[in-house]
Amino acid sequence: MKSLICLLGGVATFALASTASAQEKPITIVLSHANMAVGEEVFLYAVPKALGYFKDEGLDVTIQGASGGVQAGQVMASGNAQFITTLAEGVMQMREQGADPVAILSLKNYNGYSVSTLPDSGIKSLADLTGKTIGFPVAGGGTVMMLDESLKAAGLKPEYTAIVIGTGPGAAAAVEQKRVEAAVLWDANYGLIENLGYKLNYIDLPIQNEIAGFTLSTSDKMVKDDPKSVEGFCRAVLKGLTYTLANKEAAVDLFFKEFPTTKAANVSDEEATKGAVNVLNKWLDSALKGVTDVSKLGSFDKAKWEKSKELYAAAGTLKGTIPVDQAFTNQFIDGCNNFDHEAVKAQAMAAK
Image (tube, rainbow, N blue to C red; front, side, top):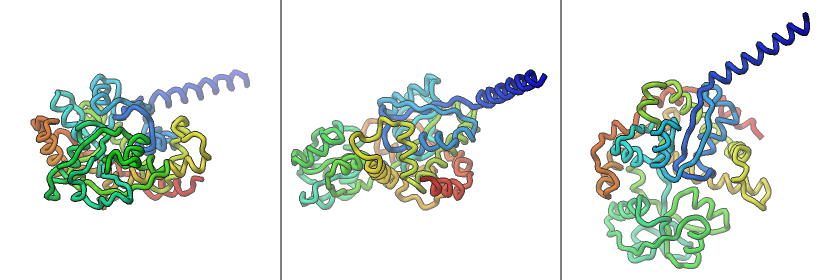
């Protein structure tokens, strides 16, 4: 009889565990870049997964990459993902094409692009770029627009020679070998270049203070049909961000455990973590630039969306036919921030 009771108890325990697992809603998020790297992946996925923040919200989350925000949006539109990361202009562009993405959380308040130069270049400001040869990761696109608009705002004409230099070591070599006199790249890429031993000076592109940035987005359908999961997901993300800000080294360690192939090869664990933290610091400095109310992390400013719409419509990327109110919502911000911040910080500080 005792054996039977134990057996039945084991079956009951298994059934309860299976039921609990079944109650976790499967969620997929698709990033707007193909490969996992130190950036939003740290607090958006690795930390909340490892520490059970997703599980606390009843979510079973998986992550995958895509070759750009449009492709990420296509995966979501097909019903194979519930969340994506993409730029604000990407959300508006997809809505103009008939899809229904809506931004629910601002991941970066400032997109993080800047002009880089060698310390001995003599280039100290935007005014010094006139007539210079400038390297870009790709031909045309938003990077060129941000430089041009920043120059115009400073009363300068966009008069320079643009060449494509790619990213990472190739871009660094182009600057070091003086094939270009300056380069326009983004924060995390500069962190990787610095980790290779390069020394660079930076000049901000102030137009980024006026436009909407990088977003976490879902669909109108998800907002309507499952607002609980939307709020729960973004709350887990902000818990991950709070933890990461309190202990970047511990957050990076969790990232490496989740994505071991991203860890720099042929260096010590200490050096790998140090390099990753440098990249993460640059990413987060841009993400939180200008943020004054930490109790409202992730909120959107309508004026910035209007400015993005104006600039990208003028550049031909957008038609400008969609009201910006349809492209973003702040309805989840209070709920996303509704957790014990001090407890999460304490958890981070206690981690080795």
